[in-house]
Image (tube, rainbow over all chains, first blue to last red):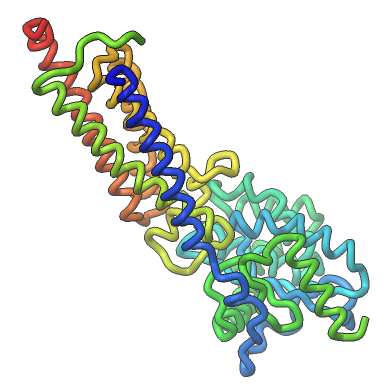
Length: 223
Length: 153
């Protein structure tokens, strides 16, 4: 018995850790429908105009994402959203709103302005995709702007104009307006998604969850 | 790793303290792992401090929360300290190696919090304090006690 005592102690601690962790996990899990499908604030700020839309502007369902290009969970959501866009085709329009968490991510603000600067030359979505897809390449870069300027070159943009626009009033103003809209809608973090104006809860921020909510929104529109 | 003689005197207290400290570290790491799994990994938030650290790219390794590796390490330290307490001599060397690796990792994480993220998470700092205390205990067990060891036998 004494020979096995240390193993007994270790086993007991392991069991206690697993049970304790399990209980804590269950208690900490967000309530299933707590914040999901909460209606959007009625008097939310309008955001940058025109909004950055991808897909059929008259689609019955609009998915509005508040994103930060340097936020890892946003980077993970990006390929899922692209697949969802393909899946729904003309029935879905995606709107991207800038919500850079500058105090958390060193290059987030510049990345947001880089996308807007590219947008001034008609290549917002190309830069948007590139920033997300190459997030791991630039998130720890010393000088983010140099990297973004290289991306602009790759996309065939007028680099001189891009370099001017990235710090210009238009790009900065659009980012500010989008952030104002996000804050007026209660956005606290990224990615935050609204489907036809209804907040998507954290538990539904998966491809399956989003698909289910888009289907429900289509059904509500009689589609 | 055959059992030899149970640790005695100062060495016994030292392994007991190591085991107790690692239990506190284990609890802290489990809490951080759960916090990561239930929210911080899916959303970056405006609030700084703990959230800034836990939502950063450094908080995960290969998709797994770093805190989960911490919990495994603390559990290993607890197990080895318990074995050492009961006289399994090989456990001492393994304990030293694991605590050495944990100390290096802790120093790196402290550097990241101070100079890269410029944000501190109190639960991460508690873990750092525990690991550095464990390192102190290990040094104490190996350096000045050699002499006492031979006296005990």
